[in-house]
Length: 146
Image (cartoon, rainbow, N blue to C red):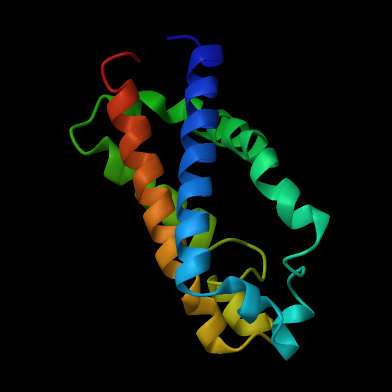
C-alpha cells in the first residue's frame, strides 16, 4: 500500500469516528449546556459559533496528520496481532493523557488550567471510544495490506 491510499483511509476513518462519537456523546453529556457554564465558556466556543460547525468538516486534515504519524511505524502496528492496541496506546498516552499542552483530560491540563476536575474527565468516554474505534478500524482495514 502506498501512503496516498493509507492517508485516505486514515482521513476517512478518523472523520467518521469523530463525527459519530461527537454527536452521540455530545447529546448524552449535553455539551451545549456544559459549554455555556461560567468557567467553561471562557475556554470553549459556544455551540452557535461557526467554528463549531466547521470542526467536523476539518477532521480530514487531522486524519491526514494521523496518517503522517502512523506511516513510519506502520509495520510495527499492522503486522502485529494486537497492533490496534499498540496504536490505541500511543494515541491515548501521547495524544490525550500526556500531551505537552494544558489540554482537557491531560495531566498538564489538570495541573495548569483553571478548568474544574470534572471537566477533564467528562470527555474521556468520547476520547477513549473514538480513538479505540479509530485504532481497531484502521488496523483491521490495513493489517494485511502494509
